[in-house]
Length: 177
Image 1 (spheres, rainbow, N blue to C red):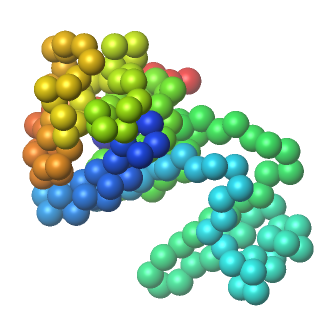
Image 2: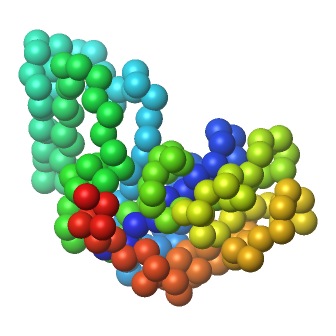
């Protein structure tokens, strides 16, 4: 399995890039999973649905499955700080690539998504885990870099760069224990 993070401030275009990378990687015959960091009050369930009723009744975990999908919802009794590595360990073993969005402080190799118009500082000068920058404004990068600069608006080229450099992103959980 290969794992790559996508880091950047809100509004930089991380979700849009990841959304467009998934089909670009799938077209290359690769199976893709996503790990996304969310705000503490997010919910994927809806009032009135059986799974929501089970959670509201106090179930610690609810697994719902059909012949097309499976979902696991887990309620923590106390706030839990799960690492990105714990979440990766929950994924199916048969995946080729895991795209991680939103764990910008993690020790995963990452592509920074940066837009000058967002008015936010770049992270690459201070984050050794950033291995490339995806941007729509390469001429406005705040500091020179030897890292590859990828076209944020060309997800196929970003996907090809990932595939071409895939060995760098091999995930070995024991390295993060």
